[in-house]
Image (tube, rainbow, N blue to C red; front, side, top):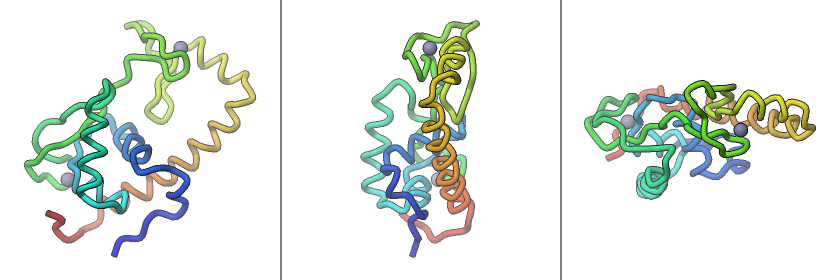
Length: 147
Ligand SMILES: [Zn+2]
Ligand SMILES: [Zn+2]
C-alpha cells in the first residue's frame, strides 16, 4: 500500500511527473518507477509519459531505467531550449539561470526577481521540491514488482 505524498493533491500527477523528470535531467525513468513514486497506476502513467514525450521537453530515454535497471521504455527530460519566462529561445550564450529544472534568460530572471510574483512562485517551488523529494525517496526504496 503506497501512501500518496501529503499535499500531492496540490499538484496533478502529470505535473508531478514533469517535475520528477526535470529535477533529474538525464535520468531515464520507466513508467513503473514513475507510477510507483506518484502512487498512481501503471496504466495512467503510460498515458502521461506518452503525452509528455509528444512535447519537445521530453523524449524516449535509452532502454533501461535509471532507477530499477529494467530494460524497458523510459522517459527522459531534454534540457530546456527556451526560457521558462518568455518562451524565447536560449542561445548558446543564453544559458542563464537554472531553477528547479527551469531555465531563464539572465534578463528575464532579473525581471522576475524584481517582480512580486516571484514570492508566489518560490513558495510553490519549495512545495514542489518537497513533493519531489518524497517521491524520489519512495522510488529508492525496495518494492514489489509492478509488471
Ligand atoms: Zn524503473
Ligand atoms: Zn526569457
